Length: 330
Length: 299
Image (cartoon, rainbow over all chains, first blue to last red; front, side, top):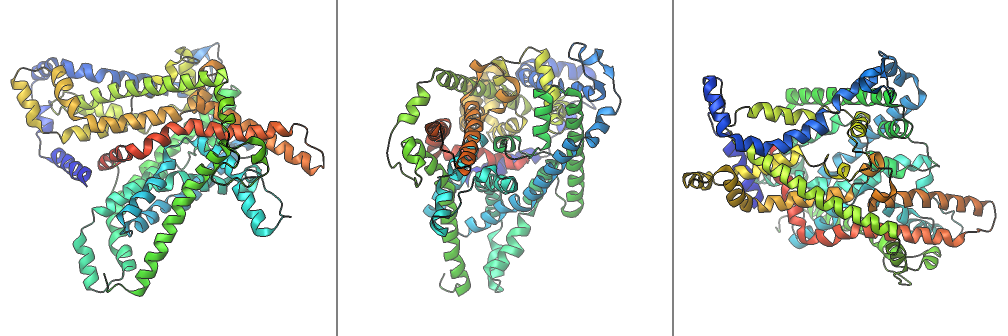
């Protein structure tokens, strides 16, 4: 609660009608600006490490995107390589491996959106109904824990849990008798995506409730009292008060999620891949064909298209959300 | 609370049961891995290890920790975590402080400059080619430098700084203190709680990182613990599958012990890579969570 008070004050102080623009220039003469900048030299020095690291590690890779339009030759470099026009961009859609990766990525993302995205909202509603504080705290502690493990450790845990003589196979044998065939769950093509979703839920569903729980706790209690007076059941209260009240938060999370529709979780997919399943997504393909095999131009083109689509999706989602619910990230 | 309907009371019971099951389902796989790691490899092979070691042994751990390449990987992981966190804190703290100055000329432009990379990036291959040109591949720098700045963290620290009373800074200024003095003597001590949160996040992210090694490191003496775990997972799954195929063909399994060990060793490796976090987490949980709520203002 304390935190939330603080954050509210934080917003308040920002929204105060500060003469922001007038102070920072505009109507003032240029000489004033120069003087102010000189006075603030120390502040610019403080900003320098951040500006520099963003320049080197975020902006400097950007011109490298021209590789997508060239036949990149390691020895000729960025500028010396020959232009290839749109050959590589077209190439993406002609190569079966690439279009398969795009399809897989989209399939996983849509399933994520339908299954993984709503889970923490539901879980937050359920956690919110817990009145026993100690129970609530302990279960939250346990549910948040996997978030802090690396994806590769999660895969490692899954291998132990799913192993031929691990708990899950033992359970199946106990349930269906000695003759039951033990299954290598992680080497089964048809189980790859279900496993992916399950592990994502296991790792992140608990942690993702935090933001929704915070939103729920700031809903005006008077509304619940009024609804209670009118005889609305708890279920109806959740449906007609809680959910609409936290809709802004849901929408914002959704926009971010839509922006990643063409991205999949590289660490989990790559971690789960093994010689017995065939499941490439865009990011694993870029890594394998690009860094491991050196077809830089084609994979840069794929990355470029992916980025372009992601940006378009974010902008579109933001636009729609603003139209429909008046919430957006900018 | 007496006038609750029967339906709601049933729901409450079901809810408690459901959450209990969920919490146990979250914990159990980890406990199982821990049990396997602490259990005798040959015994694990017989199956039925649940949440406690049936034949307790530390052998799996000593096998890993007596390997020189593993100790080397541990050293690299610790180095990445310590240096990455320190550098990250310095870069982000100073930037956040500078961005609280509303009077700063060019502030809007700077904010835009910092925001754009959140939406537009060069992508993996251009980044790889850049690092290659900058001679960053196969160096320790690639673990530490690229992650030093995080716009998200800067916004969280800045939001926290806005909540500090401005009068403190004003009075320090009247006493003749410069920016540096205000930053180190007044703002830094007051920001300790939020910096603790950011430090924890950054440390966890650095410790858990293995893709940096995968993408940018080919030298084996620069591998991290998490990367070693990945290598183990890839190998042992292949062995397990080959074994099963051999059994299905009715052959006797030649390197029976190799598989046993690989499974137990892998479990021990999972425990080694996760144990620092598991040990620290229960005590610092509130610090872990705090930043999310502050951050949610902006997001």
